[in-house]
Length: 276
Length: 353
Image: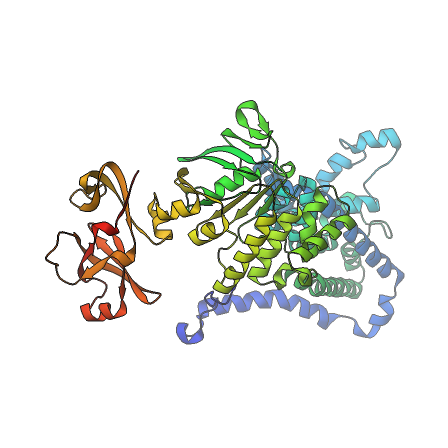
């Protein structure tokens, strides 16, 4: 229980000598590659007209749509993905290995391909979509709901893998104890397992949210880019790129600030508090 | 309340546990044994966390599990109260909700179960801790909460897994009297698993000693302690134990054919001989004179033990000997020293296997 008798994780400089340049140089290049583009955004931002451009209704519309769809798809990921993660981590379901592989496919699939794949199923002539369209006249692509589906498709694996990891590292003996006190499996899940895995679930949700917010390829392929319904921030950036580079920079900057701010806020509020 | 009657059999790989256990209502039976003897496995089977491969578990007239008849009631409907190793308090629940957990899942409403929890916290003197989280409790407090949590579930069978292990000496003393008091109040059968003989002797009405998944001895604590039938129990109660074959007054030690033990009375067949470490006299050179038990050996360990020094002596007959610190100095004893140990025949306790 006490951590004081663990050996120190970092060796002391006195014991190991100078840092080797073979490790320092690549690290430096990595940091430069990661940080310079952000610096570039800040340097090239149209600071003088910023205040006025931010209030542009089209920008606000795209921002609102992005926040709405990313948050909605995160909720969908949580509701559907957490039970799936539990099945993968705790059940003895046959074929769990194959299931996990299936879940990770969207991680390695290029988002554009994901968009095409979604069209083949949910498109107006798709396997499911065609049937729904003929029955009710409803089509999913090119709607805000379609945006949520595309974002959920790409974000779900992040949530499932993070939550599965959290459930695996949570001590299963607590589940046993809960069972001996008369808790059913569902009660054990909702009252013991879930609260214990909460930090992992929250970090999974944050990962999924960030992925959904930045989602572009699958969204634009599946839904196009219509202002107000399917033009999210990344689509708006792409759109502006062809007409007004300054506007693209501005939109990018907003996206950057919003995501960093929300991540920082959540880390502060949830992750730190929940862990300690 | 009704008693427990169980024949617990499970096989995992090459390890088989096969234990018969009867515990009357209000009785405390302690399952004692070294690590890996199957103690925790026994408890897990009773709790329903590990299925039996054969045998049965009955509480009163109700059969809870019997594989040959396809009977098995799951852990959640057995009505046991488990005090697991290391307490395992739910990290996210305050003490009150911790203790309310059992009542809440046995049909009481949230309010009722909180009230029941408050009652138990009062009875166990833990009311002050009601609003604390497990991380804010000391090891001893956490154990008491775990015990209150198990009792609050109004179990038909109480199971305790090493409730006194890994605590500091003071906490163990307090917790032992706490356990004594509350186990006496509990009117169902209690099974207490421990590797500590003192806990077993103080808390249990009856002991069951396990080794390699089998019962090697069962009986009242006093009898088990006086006449140990396994090296583990002998070591736990601080006795030397020798197993051998008696022929008249000579016992040939089973483990070491050349070594013999001379007894005061005549015996025949397989016997145990036990003797106290204080009955052993140690010499730096071979003693001459009266015909006594003399064994040559080498000191393998020395530890202070009360006013004395406990010597671990290896060789033909491994044994423990308690000598005074003065003797250690005078004889120049040190690990590696060759010594001759002697025991009077009248100091030997001899009983059949």
